[in-house]
Image (cartoon, rainbow, N blue to C red; front, side, top):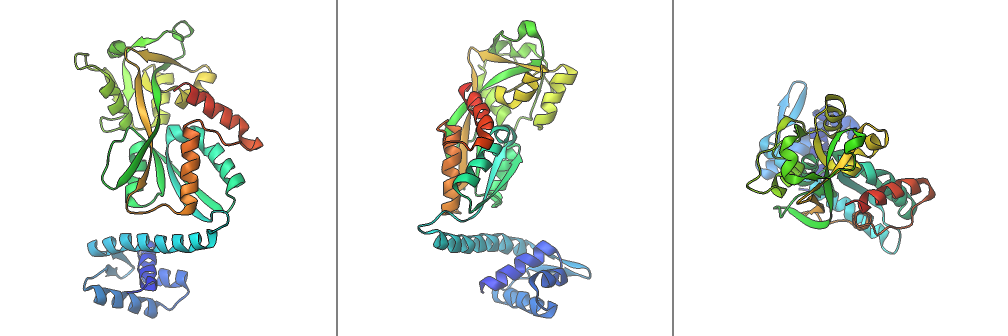
Length: 317
């Protein structure tokens, strides 16, 4: 087995076709087919199901492809790090951000990375926290910001800070400054994510056992639709104030503190225990951690406003 065979197999699966993979690799199709068959013979398993118009990984093939990607990524990382010794970090870094974190981190993170680490190619994937965790476990990410996650097999998790959650309602000037008792949340028709979502778990965990059940009228795992259902339908939701900054500024929503007790959820950073961070990825990890803690590096002029918004949001946590 050699690295070229692994590369050939991965490309064939990605292209779902031997002929398209051969074109992408600039090699003859019979040669590519022969190299993959040699790999199958060496492993003693069939890696590809072959059809008249393409190929698909078998169960064993999918496992080999997953491991091959990890091996090839480590090889690329080794080469990048060797070139980086004594120099600026070099390489690709992929980070996953939950939607609420992405609202405040994306612009300043990109700007400060371009200023401090111009040889790092940064890729940001945004999604709900549960999806981001799945991407990290599957190997698509180098690291991620996650909410409300405890010890997890395969992940190294560091709690960085936490954030306060508020009752979000349609704009009403008379109620905008009134706090809400946690026990009184049952009086509001709510739209919340489903029971398995980290935000929902944090909300349920903060309530006392004797409290009556919440009136959850609708369950939606989408930040955009959570806010729309509040602003347009008149339901209520529970989110960090920073997640509704634009709608609050536009006079569409209000955020009210929840007290007795407050509801907070941890903000963590996570990496895979099976894939060590490259020098470039470690630089981005340290930068994001500092930003979440409010330990601000000097912001480029283009992102100073975004930084001010980020730190104002952090000050409310």
